[in-house]
View 1 (cartoon, rainbow, N blue to C red):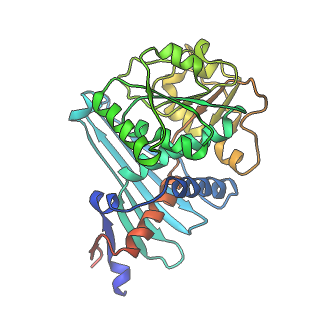
View 2 (view 1 turned 180 degrees about the horizontal axis):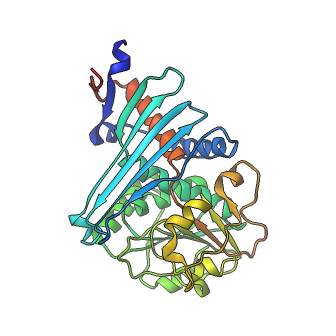
Length: 329
């Protein structure tokens, strides 16, 4: 067995932070992953979940294969401190990639930056496919990790957006959202809103990224005809799903597992009309009438982590970043 068979490139948080990648590149990479999945060339089995009875932590394991890149990968995710404040929580996520042509390991990397890019990219793809003609106003709820790049990705996918609204309460998070918008779109202005209902009534797109402790909850009656409500974290009342004219999900199966907080009084979720991979592949339509109110559920699929993680691993290898570890010697 030669050196390449026994050595693994490990990419740390700081290694990945130094890599430049455009938002358009991220969108293209994620979209390709969905198209390949829809074509039946990739595998995305259901995730495994472990959670103690008291709910203080949660762990996930996800295995998948990207048929376009011929890469197999395992993603793990562990969060501790779900019962305490964000500043006391511990969160670790890793991705290990293997080349399914040569059979050799590609890299093991911190997956936090991958997730922080992949998730808002998926929201932007949902927005692009679901938006009614002439959509001009976007509202983002939440200023955490997923909220900070939501608007730059939306503008990349929908450059015709004119009003950019933000609902948030944490000063540091608001400042971070402003900084990311200025970095990617320095000519665009952000409107901080305090009346969530009024903002939601104006919005063509609502992207809810808030954490589990938020008090924000957009009601179905607040959404105007043709509006799209995209759920990433929290910030939408269950009625926005149950009274939607059309329901889109990245994965209907995953929505049934992770979307239980949106269930009705009987514990039921409405059926999904179409999944995003099929829409992107041209096998289904997200919107079938201009006046439809659409609910879109954004849950991560590991094939998108694999595609984006592999893209980062390629960029890192080109720049000789990372640490070579003789793991199997």
